[in-house]
Length: 179
Image (tube, rainbow, N blue to C red; front, side):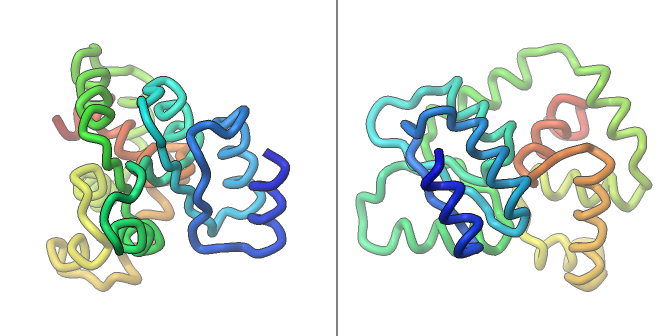
């Protein structure tokens, strides 16, 4: 935990890569997000996926859960997406588990209350974010500039009390914005 925190504070990287085996992963993720808010966090798994630890890390603000790289350039490509503000969840089993957990539950009243705070445009942005669109694609879909999209995303994250796009996407699923 100390090493990840020190790297984030001293170097302010665009993306910090940590192992799923980091002790107190969710706490470390939250600490890094609070200390270096411009740093996205990618969690790399090694063998069996600890679904609960991965879900806690995502809820704490991690931007990605990645399989160990098996092909040259795979990690670099994923890190570029993450640095661009995208959420990346590579293990299909984890994606299926996340979607199943969220869609199998009844809608969450707290998530619905938070989403109701959004303007109509912010709601549209949240919907596109939850579907995994990049800022550029959201801008094209809404016929606005990327700068405007970034402003909307910032307000969406603030109103939803989320640390990352991934956490906002979970609120979107829990509130029924997307299915």
